[in-house]
Length: 571
Image (cartoon, rainbow, N blue to C red; front, side, top):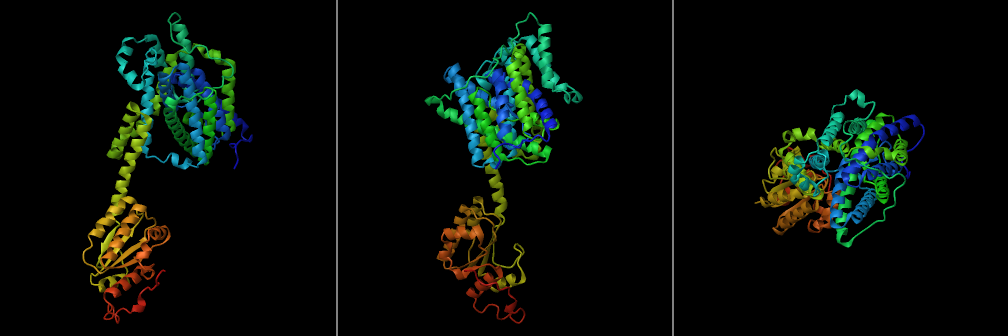
């Protein structure tokens, strides 16, 4: 397997142009996310460079652009706040960057274990609620800088409780700049958006107007950004916080996997290619380890940057490498130009990102699609905003899976049937109907069909308990492709109880995984080999003859026994 991503120079012009346009979009977003997280603008910029470079070089999606994203920033904000509160500013920041490195390690482990295809296998209601919750958090966290004030701390709850004070101390000049940034991004005509990103326009216009209109107003600005390469961050742990750090790293790593792989699917649909999900996770992990080592924000695949890159002509990983190189030049050579950017403008940009993350489309129609699904989504949103991300995803997936299993079990239970006469509930051919009728109700056909998951065990027990008078039971497993452990135990119990009550037991169609599982449970030690069949008509015939040895003789002239589809027994 090729270690690096697909890089060639056959599409040099398109890759370079795609990289340039992606870099132009990445610059204001990286600054906004860096400031919003509490790590600083420089962390956002270095996260965009390092995650973008290593994910492009070692990932599995040639056109994917990786950088700090809204969801990753929300989680990182909470990580920084909790660790600083538990320690001090310097130690807390060092531990937060260690969490970023650990998140990268988790991602590499996921990729090495080839779990890529399972990462995004979550119900859409949970993903939608989770992402909408993150969008709401990002919006709430921007309220204070939007109103021209420092973040009150305490996360979402702290900000919500401080809203009266924030409104009472509003700074009109900064609020105007933030609102202007949102308005430019929101209402900029599409024909202009194709030429220049609205985020960059908002950044430039907001900065210029702040200096022209409010030269004597003390507006909060980014301040000086250190030029040159950052110092390496030594991984820092504290015994009393290590469990929290690993939990945060797992959340950050999983969120990055979901974010990146969902964006990879978008890239596939635009380029008509297919990404390597496991390789992509390894590339994302290496990028986040590098970013954490040098004090950068965590990142993941960014939908906006990826789409712009592809529309600009990017087709190989060279576009992502070019984007990272351009941002590196900006940081090393022109970082001081960002010192005058108002924090309110960045808050406006981040505010709009939060609004865009909310899944408005599904929110408007979720209740029409499924009331239960809508309730799951609203519950996940509430847990994400008011509790924490782990609880939101864990409870959401659990409830969604329980409801799904209950529904599937109900549907599958209808495929567990027992009949003693040839009615229309089960499709029987002429020979099968004949032998069932010959048994005169003394032979029971117990049919199972479809995958037998654990929820079907109750139906097997219910049908089995309903059995009253019969002398022989034919268990038909011909249409069972998979037999779960719980369902197998329920079937084993039914067979053993039938044998203990003196009933003759026949098994039809046990093959493959079903046969192996029943064999391991010892069912074939209870049912002798000559009672195992692959043909239902033959099993019914022998069951009827066991109960009535003279069965079939009176009707032999009408339907000779030679017409029976005699496939024989299966040892």
